[in-house]
Length: 237
Ligand SMILES: Nc1ncnc2c1ncn2[C@@H]1O[C@H](COP(=O)(O)OP(=O)(O)OP(=O)(O)O)[C@@H](O)[C@H]1O
Ligand SMILES: [Mg+2]
Image 1 (tube, helix red, strand yellow):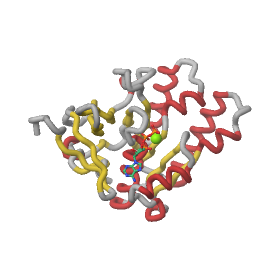
Image 2 (cartoon, protein in one colour):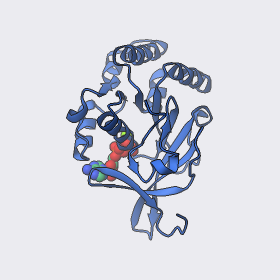
Image 3 (spheres, rainbow, N blue to C red):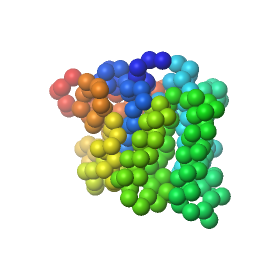
Image 4 (cartoon, protein in one colour):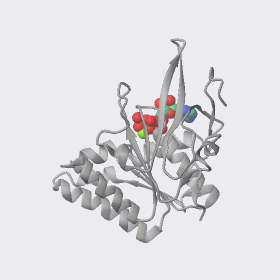
């Protein structure tokens, strides 16, 4: 297995020293609608398709049907990679478990993740999303609980992409200091220009063991592929 997983965002992997280091925990964070789920799915879809990497996408907020339809409309047809990319809708078990103790909920979540690892031996996991996990697990001491959860994920020997949300008015990437706990942060935002148009942008805020750029890049989706270019009006390459 390679030492890094490419993001398959054209022009961005070069800025990440080739991609995300194996066995990292990376926060993929942005405001609503900044294409967090699409970027996360894009990483799994292309690694499953091109590298035959084993991948799991855990959806907690969007149903599998809605996710698959959205990704297909973007040219990422799940049918092409069903052997290597599994989508797990834990939202479904969440409805069945409403009467359970919240600590039991987190146990059930971990059991799912662990059983899948034993069965599929997957390499990359996307969890969509951390705020929903937070609500369902009702962490008592979020910083400590997240620390233990991240340590537990690290021991599984997988690369985890944790999708998270941030308020447009906030300057903080995290609610419970998870920005300090994770190995990497990729930030997605939308920027108004000229009072009319809005540009999507991407930035690697941090990535341990990686000589990466910290600049913003314009993020575009065209012909079924994500790509980045330097921000218009920015003279730096
Ligand atoms: N076929 C398409 N091609 C390009 N862009 C699309 C396409 N379909 C939807 N979009 C854009 O993708 C956005 C949704 O992407 P996605 O669901 O990945 O965002 P998100 O950040 O995960 O959203 P949320 O905050 O709701 O979880 C839409 O708001 C729309 O702007
Ligand atoms: Mg989403």
